[in-house]
Image 1: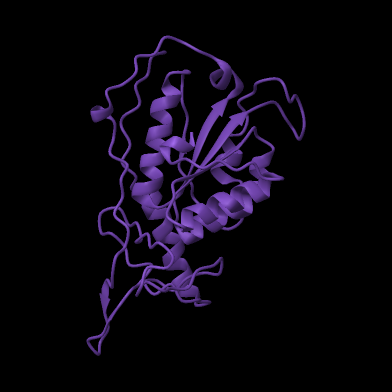
Image 2 (image 1 turned 90 degrees about the vertical axis):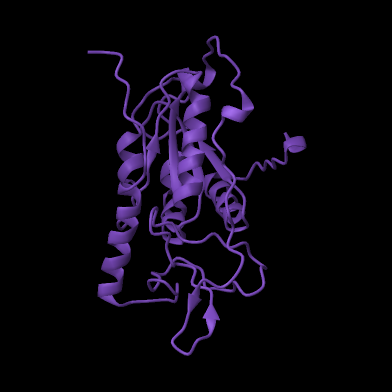
Length: 236
């Protein structure tokens, strides 16, 4: 679908796939990587990196039977705990799960909204029956779809004690706790990035225990504060 500005890339393995996707997110794109289940384990370190970098990234897990290669042509819904907890350290990630083939459309939009608004990787937890199933579906009115456009950082956002204005990559939105999304190459927005723990606000490398606790709690609070609609139960 490159006529819609979408670029696809088939990598050589699961790790390369999510690495390329996270790089695209760093570059300012809404990035998506997919797997059928076992690849979640291989992607886990980079998902943790996305949690630390606080960048939007969709991880679509269309579940199949396991463990390991398991039942590669059979459907199973057994990856929930891995999606929730399958990373080292404390790395909270929201999970969105569609309920029907048609609901996959709305679930994908909701996952994208959460990823962009809160600057976080998001799991879209589907399965083989939903992925290959079909049902009547009314095409929505485009003007009724959620607006997924985002405001990229464009200049300094912090004033130092000496009056100079600088860019802090981890200065947060007070409502969502999301950090600014800075497109590489934007003048004045140079900042450090990487997997090592960041100093609150500046993003500099920090090994300070109190700062690490603050960042862990802040990342969790950001996920806890995600706005989600009430679940509609259609079964006793």
